[in-house]
Image 1 (cartoon, rainbow, N blue to C red):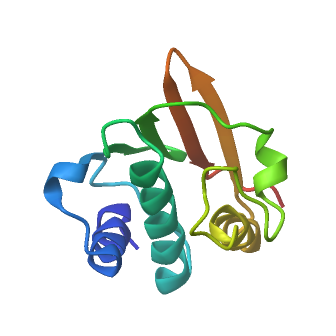
Image 2: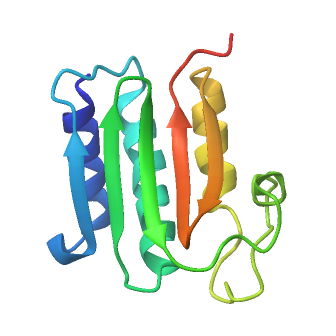
Amino acid sequence: YRAVDVIAEALDLGYFEEENYSLDISLDLMLHVDYKLFATAIKNMMDNAIKYSDDKKVIITARESRILFENYGKGLDEPLSYYLEPFTKSHKAVHSFGLGLYIVNAILESHGYRLRYEYLNGWNRFWFDLKLTR
């Protein structure tokens, strides 16, 4: 599928307002994925990025071998691996079951991809590493 179509499906699933996201998507980026599952993973990343940003915005860039989700705000309290376990969450996520990143990671792993994270100059940067791991 074209990445732009899978991301459009994620936008529909999440009922996101246009002021909460910006997109920079390569129109020729193809994804060999389960369409609905991958759209769900993108939707979950967008939900988290918007919820935990200072300005309620996410920037999504899809190029070559990654889909990047950036938001401005506080970095993770724990290493990424902590949040990839079920029922774990930050202390400020009181209305959460702690499954968002766990589900995203499970979807990515089922496709042979990885979830990556870095915090740089006030920016949280999560990305789907689309280089096959298997």
